[in-house]
Length: 548
Ligand SMILES: Cc1cc2nc3c(=O)[nH]c(=O)nc-3n(C[C@H](O)[C@H](O)[C@H](O)COP(=O)(O)OP(=O)(O)OC[C@H]3O[C@@H](n4cnc5c(N)ncnc54)[C@H](O)[C@@H]3O)c2cc1C
Image 1 (cartoon, helix red, strand yellow):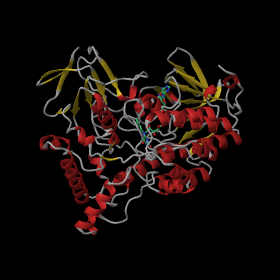
Image 2: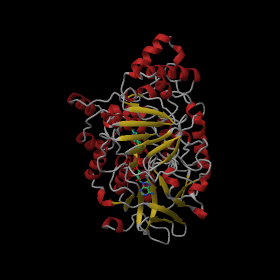
Image 3: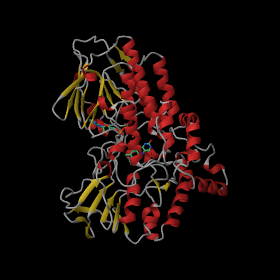
Image 4: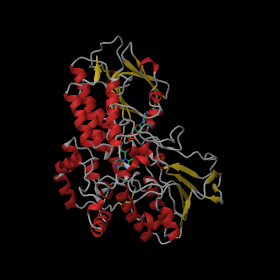
């Protein structure tokens, strides 16, 4: 351990034992990095444990070809430091993964965070010790650390999942998941490639692989509605404009429901004429980013008729872009309406299926039977491949919590308490788990993630400051406070068409045992509402929490 970790804790221990650290943070993605910066600022002793070999989280692990933002780069970066905004320049409106990984490294170096991070270590268990009033944290190297406060910054999309297919370990070629991509370059030139999965990562991968692969076979279970990204480089003039208007950009994000620069159109879909509607949708389709999803008519995601019209518009686009009518039909989602699952943004995705080297296999007609040493065997026979890519997503939202054994008061396990759905207070605290603080935990506001990260980290730092200033060493959400927040979460979900669809947003992932039923999996209210309520808790002196 370094000097920092050995420093005596600044929070006065009201408890018998002195922990190694005031604060231990798990995860060195953007959330963990910013939380580290804020905790250090409070004068508390702190270290970070990170499973990966370096900083960046999502952007460290997801190195697959074509990985890039769906958020506008200049709305994604942190806003807390004017120097950072001045000195960091995004090169594209939707930056590719290598650039975002450089950004994470830039932050770590600029604020000298790296010396406080232990890489290549995974937290496997954390146990609350009530008598000593601290957490005992076990790592996968067999060592333990103790800390007064445990902060999880472990990501909502950080646990990749593979389908349960027989023979997956027997493949003789290269096999990889998009979120666990090799660090050395992978060439597809002249190779026979299979991509399994057509969610956001699958779509990005497919576009890229199709350029050079000898053959690309896409195995699709659920087609998604995909809309054009319209990415381009940021010109020098635009760069100057962006830097001069950061204040306005972040204000727009703060005021919008999901932290993006896009806001819903105040009109209802059927309020305008068919011609006007078509022209509006054409305009949105031609614009960059999530405008078509988040800047659509305000009822598209809640009104069945409006959603059906929008879905029909998107289906016509697919039919226009894909030459073979049978392939086009396979690419048109039939089991969910537009925008009710995470919308992949694409660049020439549909045109890929016009290429002679690309074939689409619908897993509903032709299920995979097993992976063989040579390739993939379906009901129709065996296909040989050199590379198999799984773009099969994540055990989302709570997956990283389920992977750890987190034991609170009275020996209760977090995963047992969350059977039937995660329950938290603002995604930050929980009853029965004192001094466990979650950043981007289940039931926090999502959307343009760094906008939420910044808010949640600052809220957690504010709470720690309050405890430090009042000489308190224990904080736990009251059960009724958790119940109260869960009622708000439940009410916010009423009427959303996305709740009627199986997806990670409703907690469904059939590749994970016990996650095949829809549950209340996320807070789907707006960011401004979330912040107003959480601000009120802090302003009221945290009366919803038991503090001792
Ligand atoms: C391909 C992809 C594209 C995305 N694009 C966007 C986008 O355009 N806009 C947007 O807003 N969001 C996007 N996201 C979401 C993205 O996850 C967030 O934007 C953000 O990077 C999350 O940061 P985080 O620090 O909360 O979590 P993460 O970046 O996931 O970091 C969590 C870290 O915790 C570590 N960890 C987890 N468990 C343990 C453990 N037990 N022990 C030790 N370490 C552990 C992990 O190794 C990881 O490094 C995307 C996600 C993916 C996968």
